[in-house]
Image (tube, rainbow, N blue to C red; front, top):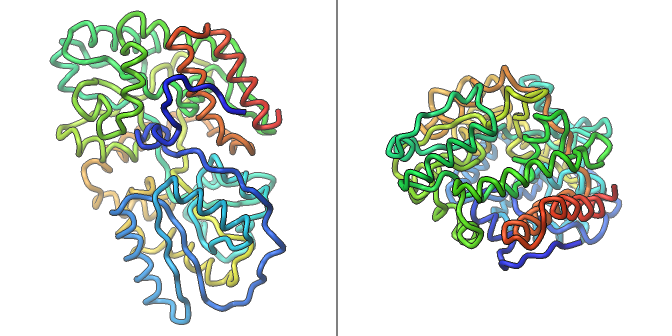
Length: 434
């Protein structure tokens, strides 16, 4: 089911804005076939998405791997995010999936349930330096279908210069509440120096999940159902309306403009907005565009609920196709990506702080300033975290589109808070078969 979208802002526009970390992937049109067997031919198709800098360093990793593994050939297929999923859908449906590929948590179960991914226990990959909690993010039904490349965390990214210009004190992020956040952003907006928060991440299901987890709930349950109550989502939407009415966030039309502008032109990046919620691996791009220092604060409400809502999210996963023609070669490549000095010296924190804890410790001194900022935030946060959420169910990739649609009708006052919640829950339940 698709939600209404009166502003005409597409899900892919939001991906451009960088606020969801992933765009909607098309569901597979057909199941994979019986597989191509394990011919041991040494020929690997290797697919990933990302920016040009990621493409460049990943090719250098491939070259380093090939220099150490005679008899293996690799056909690299870099792509940008939207095109990646379109191409992968076609490839898997045609029983021609890449041997080694990047995966995203929203779609990991979709592809595994379509019998497109290999259970990685069947391969010789050294996982001894990856913590159990990190590994679990790619596991379900007792098997591992994705090995995390690295981890990141949600943060409130703050422009301290604008906060100071507004004459507002920085909060104690270990104790502040959502009410404190509302006052903080309202006071910034009232100063006339900047907008307190642009509101472009309030229809982000990952951010709502943090809010729900703080109340002892979750976006999804372990068995793939909705894991939150209507009361919790009503509270979330009511906070958004209260922020809008107080001036802490812009009017509806301005919020839509910010969606469409893209991450580089979003209020935080242009110096017009003082705060926004982002993943830690997005800080570098924001700071580069802004041209000045940013500060990372914990999401509000971590100390006022029944448990912390924040968690370490796997930035992305390495997966292997069930139809790979050479399981041993695919295993060698994944092992090299995860564990080798050559790989991590080039990758650093671009795919999240490395899941290999020994490599994470080793490269910390090499991290550029923006990645070091995220690393310090994660290191400070980690001791206080609860266990992460379950792997999202099949159909969960639709959540972002649905949440955006109901959010937009609400901020334009076309629906009430309660109607917005009911619509979201009804549509998402239909998508995940709950």
